[in-house]
Image (tube, rainbow, N blue to C red; front, side):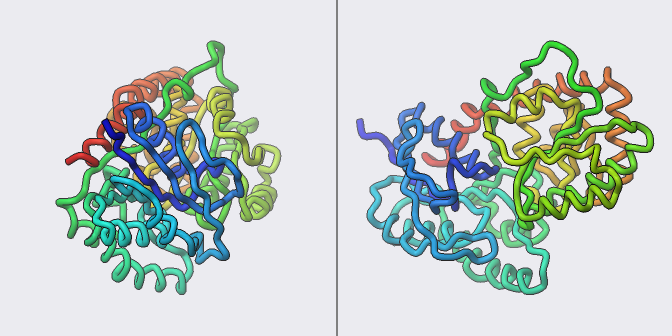
Length: 376
């Protein structure tokens, strides 16, 4: 019996680590386990010579330039046309690769799926204008041509400020399927107490991820330090804004409380989740899902997040952490102090978080839901 062949076209792939890249990697692994053949075509960023990872075939394309955060890969159309596949699955954190993929799949008379990981918005006036033009031209065309749409954020109808009104016109195509988590990797490994007053934040530190809310987190640490002088924040990630955040920490006189760990291997995150007493994701806008929250909760770590992240309702339902309004350093500081000063409550929330992930976000089950979209 011939294997069904899936072609995935994310902007980037492993060893680049981000929410979309993790999604494509874990989905591809599960698809292979279930008997599918999987190929990934992506930009060669960061540069890698790996052509196969755990059964996933990879074609990495050169890109001469970027437009905002979008890698432009001129060879992508030719590469897709030369590929043999039954279903094309593209991913929309950025334009170009998804738009080209959907158009070519239509021309080749192949079924196409798009997973939308984030809302789309930019901070500067020019970028906002360009994004607005794109949304009402190529984005709408792609949504009209694609066969099925998957959105990972269950709250997209309220939290996707820039695109919700466009997406609502295609509701008959939409399935809401969240990110999954590798429960065999992300789990509680410490049997002793976690490091007291140790907070953790994980994100790229570039301008495209400034919506993760680190400015407000640093201001909250300044406030919380007045009550807990030895509060400790580890920031994992690299990017051009790292120096800016370091300078801000000094300006707030919290440089001894904030530690910039830098970039680490994805698998090494497990030990950091297990060493911390609290994980924080204070996103301010366009947050698609917040997969780091799943990783933290899988390690039985209580979390604090804002009400725009895709898991916020589940976190409330399971009492796995505290949900606050975005862009409010005082509310964030209050939540931090509440959990650091009540270890019994924090421990209960951590246990609830693990239960939440086990019952709702196992990658094996998530992949099966995506496979149903392929076959319907």
